[in-house]
Image 1: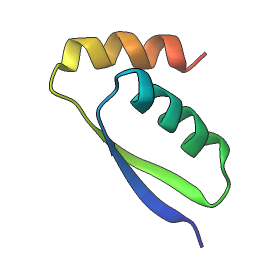
Image 2: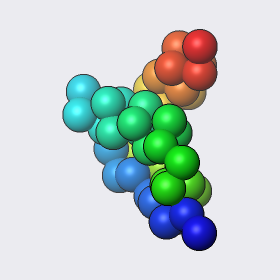
Image 3: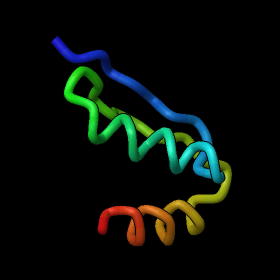
Image 4: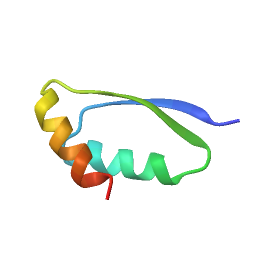
Length: 49
């Protein structure tokens, strides 16, 4: 059973945390909170690989 996780913030540390959550089998990323949605779109597009 995975732990459902929400990350608030997509700055330097947030991006690292998101990458680790996505790779780890015991966690499920269910949401990301941001204060600047256009920045998140750009970040997620480059992070998705």
